[in-house]
Image (cartoon, rainbow, N blue to C red; front, side, top):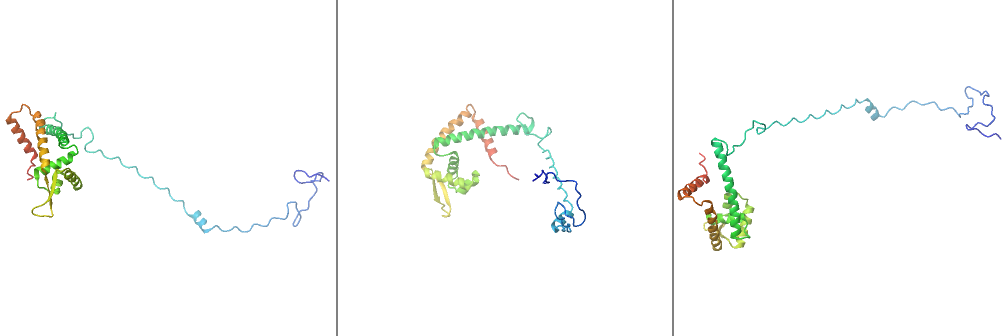
Length: 231
């Protein structure tokens, strides 16, 4: 038997033999392919998609405008006067600087005084106690207004002072629903000792001043601490 070749044709077969042609003639490729039917119409969604125009690209967001220069920027911007400047503004700058230094020193003095009064009494509670001693009988609301503290802070400081035995809370004589604050004898005795020590500190600052200078200085401080008439 002849061995088939690579394409399946038997070895020795005549390759150029004539083959019948025409309709119905057998071929080696098998029966004729069925004629192609009509193309199926495209799906409505696909048809609409193909017919719809392409969506325009989103416009780019405009760039944020640069922030305008503020009135306090640039070489010609106004500046705060300094103590070295001439005129009233320079004098005012000197006053502000000196008052700032005095406030820093006062805070340091108060903190030291609070520690001498009682190491467990913080400076804020010491401020509250000083106010009570100067304005008693007073209410917690009075302290809130005078010291610009919130109610919860005042309540905490008053509770601390009461627990330490430095403040008493008693009903108001005119309205028993209102509770007033007053200092105890223990607080008065301890505060007197602290005030003597504070006076020694302040004396060191005015050593060598005359009585007239002290009187003038006290008058200027009183005038400064008295709010101006709003008229």
